[in-house]
Length: 119
Image (cartoon, rainbow, N blue to C red; front, side, top):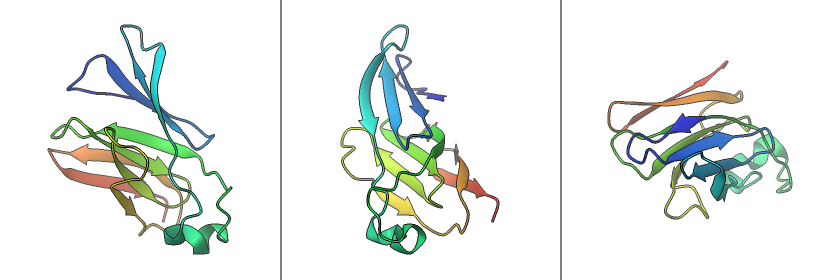
C-alpha cells in the first residue's frame, strides 16, 4: 500500500491476483483504476513460456515523490514496472534485469528507482 504525497485522496494497493488498484475518496472506498501489467509479453516470454494468461503476483508499490503521476510496481514475474497513472494501458518502462521475483520498489529522491529481489 502506498499513499500519494501529491494527492492525499489517492492511494495504490497491489495484490497476488496480479493487479494494482488506485483508490480514491475520503475513506479510499472507490476504486478509481485497475492496472494489470502485461504478463507473458515478449520481454518475459522466456520466464513464463509465452503464456499470456499467466498472472504473477504484484508484491510492492511506490509513488514517485518528484512526479505525481508516476507509479512503480514490483512483480513476481522478475520485473519492475513504471506506470503513468494518466494512461495505464501499457507501462512506461519494464525493468527486466532481475532473475528472481521482485519484492520491493522504492523511489529515492525525485526520480531514482530501486528494486529488490533475492537474486
